[in-house]
Length: 535
Image 1: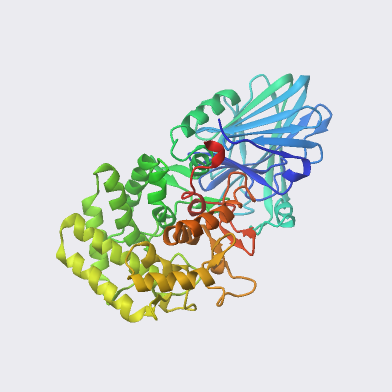
Image 2: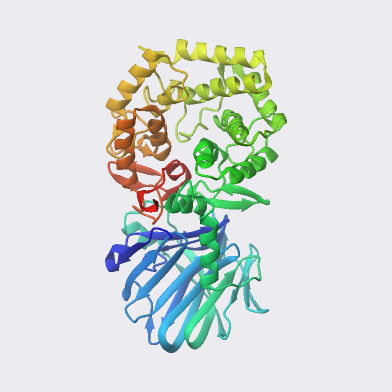
């Protein structure tokens, strides 16, 4: 089961692949190159393994003797010209690597280490090596264990600086790259036909490649509604925080739980079968609700996002509709925050909308979300005050953010018409005239052959700025707003970018037909329908 991607030779040079489960993830180029500071083995926001260098007999495995890769979202098999295969799978404990040759050969596996936090580069921390049922490598940030039964280990303890990101930059990745450290811990050696290495983070539980692959396959089969590819793509973005399910915003460098990104995707995630994970993530968010009742834009942050609080109220109701369970106290406090900040519009920080590189006062999508949140709160709690608040905010929208029956982007911002203008339409708040005129303008100024632009073509820069591009989020809004014929066309063009940079990944943004930014984003993939090959 699963949609296997096979790339031969040079076709793998420009692609990356991702293996990820419960916050432990491994990233590499599809030809085996560790060509980025984001490549290697991570757990949440801490990196551990910088690279593996494998010598099989007399030859080092490298892009030069790479033959092809077979990848199905949960495992990767890299095959080399000397008939050596490197198989990899991530588990809930770490990474399992299985090396296979046609006959017994000499193996030498060099372990390159870089234990650091996500926002760091060079750090000069001291490393320690110790042996206890494997080799333990540690510094002040963390530690992991390498276990390879039957292999000997020769410590090297060499330290060097290098710049792996040159490879990614030369291949069109616009990731931020910086010089890195590598601590060459040592070499595992063995003479055998098959050699396995377990890289364990906070665990002593070893497994085999076959066992890890079987367990992961069972996990993905829990989501038949989504199908193999979409379920796997979503599952790659899942993590564990304080015993709760949570979701990374994106890979490789948004390996954090952004509440806003997740909350926009609650309905699609529920539809894809992730209801239990959604509820668990909602509980984690509730634990970090701020004293004034607002919801931080990052789960453990100290500042509310412009949209995170109304999104939490709406998402709570969506989960309630599925389970009959709701945290009434948390929702009430979030609603009270909205009422307290309602002065005509509901006040919000201008720089913390989802377009967080732009200052936008009185953003249309934020006000529209509060109309929806107050409406839902009124129904949940049978509260006329909330119903009146919804009507008040809508009246201000019509007086201040509607021109010729078209929704404007904001009261005070750099753009007049953006994809944000679709939010009152997709939430069913617009009148018939507002809906028709807003969608007519959107068809002309926002629709492209590969998704929905965030900012009108008439107002965008050339080249497009970050928040002017096609986004997964804005494309999702378009799919909720337009008729079936147009949405089918939009979706078809958008889905062409599946696997465009990271296999099984949907990019953060698309600009003039080129994927840019993070190569696998939660709100780019969560809403996608079951793929044809899964049928």
